[in-house]
Image (cartoon, rainbow, N blue to C red; front, side, top):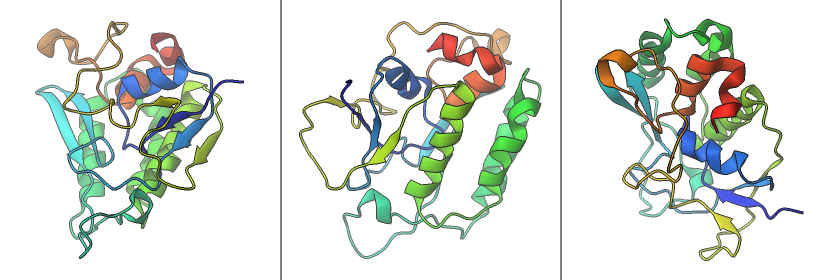
Amino acid sequence: MSNPVLLSANYLPPVSYFHAIAQNTGTILLDQHEHFPKQTYRSRTHIATANGILDLMIPIQHGRKEHVAMKEVKISYDHDWQRLHWASIQTAYRSSAYFEYYEDEFAPFYERQFEFLFDFNREQLELMLRLLKIQREIQCTDRYVKNYEGLDFRTSIHPKKASLYANPKVYYQVFEEKTGFQSNVSIIDLLFNQGPQSKMYL
């Protein structure tokens, strides 16, 4: 039996996140007790656009507590970020081969208001695993473990660190002729461009 793979619950995670899942057959263990760290994939994603990489960030509510467990982080709706994110995704991918094929699967995440970031990210993860045809059980941690003895990708999959996917398979991207191949962007880039074949690139 394979050991569980410990991951953070990330927003439209990068390709390397799913590479880590695809290469390890264990249960996915999402850390819901870690303190929410700023400037990570937990609340941001990168998409490939005609002008290069675009960051999309989910705003969160800031309370009095300095350290907040991931499961308690609340999404802020003071600004209409859902409309902006969905419009950016549509602009970037409407001409991709499979955007219309998956559009109705993703649209509800930009219409329904989730209270907690963890729940939003987990439901998106369940969807993306289904679309990628990767069958994994998802469990959540019952406490925070700093030094996990198994496979721990919580800190290694980070916007400011080199991708874990050292030699990624190149696939066609909409704006590749203009920008060159943009590696390790959000998994939706792979899905919208390669559709049912996406798993082969992980």
